[in-house]
Image (cartoon, rainbow, N blue to C red):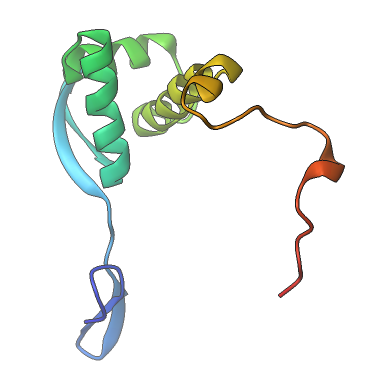
Length: 113
């Protein structure tokens, strides 16, 4: 086996090991499971803490908003949207990140290495 993300060999066949973590949640239609990356589970727990909600309530709220891609996709999009909405210019300045420059010429030149 090569590290935690490398292939494992079963019967001479390389099998990729997934980083996804499966957890049970109580969703709109009862108990179910979702497979997400560890970073997304951490982000969801942070959102729960910020919003004063448990995981089941948050997932039910996401489901009620609707999403064509299914529950897990809806949760991924929700997490990205939540933090993207929070990433305002004011928030970046307060964190010392500076302002967003939309002028493409001000970006550092990228080499084709």
